[in-house]
Amino acid sequence: MTYAIETNDLVWSAGRRANAFRLDEVNLRVPQGAMYGFLGPNGAGKTTTIRALVGLLRPKSGRIRVLDHEIPRDIAQALSRVGYVPERPHLYPSLTVAEAIRFHAAFHVRWDQRWADDLTTQFGLDRHRRITALSKGEIGKLMMLLAMAQRPEVLILDEPTDGLDPVVRRDVMMALIEYVAEHDATVFISSHLVHELERICNWVGVMDRGRLVAELPMDAFKSGIKRLRVRQAPPTPGDTPFVVLAREASDGLSASEVWVVRGWQAPMSQWFEGVGASLHEVVDLDLEEGYVELLRTFRRPAA
Amino acid sequence: MFEHIDPQSPTPLYEQIAARIRVAVAAGDLGAGIALPSVRQLAQRLRVNPATVVQAYRALEADGFVDMRHGAGTFIKAVAGERRSQERQDQARQLVRELLASAARMGVSPDDLRHALKDELGAAA
Amino acid sequence: MFRQILFTQWRWGAPLMVLLGILAIAIPVGALSTLPVTPSGILDRVAFWGWLYPMLAVLTGLLIGTSTWAADHRGNHVYALTLPVPRWYYALLRYGAGVVLTVAVGVVAWIGALFATSGLDLPTGLQTFAGAVAVRFLLTSVLVYSVVFAMASGTNRTAGWILASLGGLILAEFLVDAFGSEVNILETLAILAGSAGGPFALFSGTWMLVAI
Image (tube, rainbow over all chains, first blue to last red; front, top):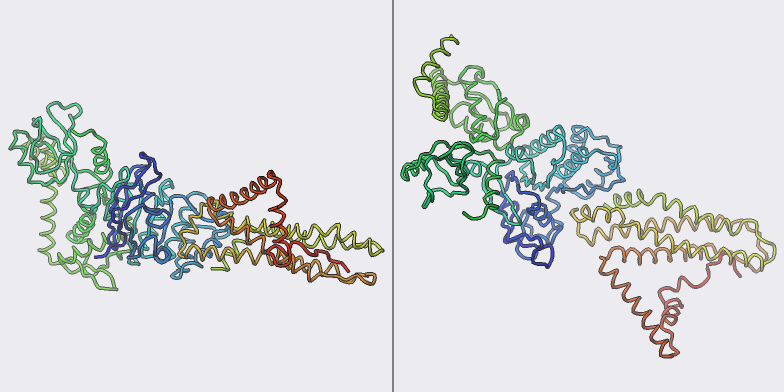
């Protein structure tokens, strides 16, 4: 199966100094038709990676392929099939909404004017308003409109609704879902709105400090990390069938610890009996908690 | 019917959606021949991935609850009475399992539980 | 695509072009309204106003050239770079749009010159050269526009090279002078460039609307 987006050992550096920010051998694999949520703390390299994908940055080494086009060599062809919404709006400010749409349409052969018109109405955009006079939410909606009316096969969205009010976010999500339902598209979306990604994404990629630290289907990511409440825990765990990400003394309850583990499966509770401990509770983590725990383990000094 | 879809729950979303429809069919709220919302409509209403809705509908089709007619939509199949009551029993069992798990977590004894159940069921009758 | 680029170019260049257009008409009209009676008086008047023409041509090329990339530059070129056309093609479209606008000003200048020189009561021996001057205006403005566009399209590095070369020439001139040589580098280059075969020949030569 070819991937919609694929990078091989992507390396990029912000400068020549030793402590310059780097993308460190990033290996992205975004399956065709997936809705891929791209998570990571600020400064982790999400926007940098995305800019490399659309040819705004030239990698130092490694390969990038989008829909089987080599980037940056075949960037113009790739961009004709990719809808991109950058973190910061890049429209020409003195144009009106209608003029901006006409401009964008002229460059995209598969433009769907009817869909653009529908969205203009759906999003409540005033065609004759200048872009400088639009609110943040309206600009966000216009950017999504332009990206989707191109009828792309891949949508690359960099925090498209972060910082926008819930009504706008809902409007944008509804339109995105409608688009995905009607077309066979792959969506790559980076966002801090973890709960929104949890609803719609079926793949998750996590970046931290320039590296891609996790990439797996959403369900596997969520079910993979659990919080265990353990009593009479052994001082050193030794060989465990699961990966212990962290151990903490539980708040208040003495003699009980909280373990954060990865790769948990129900039958593993027997292991605890084997070492004289008792497993009191298995807590499921939602996407945000799982993601936070994963990142915390990278920041903790090794046990 | 779909008010309590919980994306944060460990139960996959498609399972939650399918379960809701199963409950409705078992209770007789969704009769044979009724059309379910289109994939696009339901995905938009719930703000979930359309693929999730497709997965739910496919699971229901595999269980014999619905018919996915390409192009026309997804329709509830006529489900025999015993099948529906079997479904209701399965759901009851699922609820009890969850109740017992919570009770164990809180340290509530089976006896206390039985008492409480009798009282509450008596009050509800 | 070109239509849209031209449209956007016009949009943010419009006030500028109106100004240039007004000047392009004002200069010939101002020069030739209520002419003096004697031929020498006429020639003096025309010569007095004459230097404004090439100035306006250069200004037109300069202003349109610098405004071409202004909007893209403000957005750090992200929009242009993420459009599905090769960069060189986009630059070509921008260049072409600028040429159209520059020529438009040139046409207005021509109209202004024709209007100003029509129905003039000239003493014998003097002729009007509206057409010649207008062609000179057009070519000069397009040339200046092209040079400015090329510089604006380059990166900071190329602009740096251009300035460094100019600086090098000036330094060389200075050194040559210091060693008492008779050779005058910059002047020679200027003469070569400005004479009949050189690229800047347009700048020299007659800009006079009325001459012998």
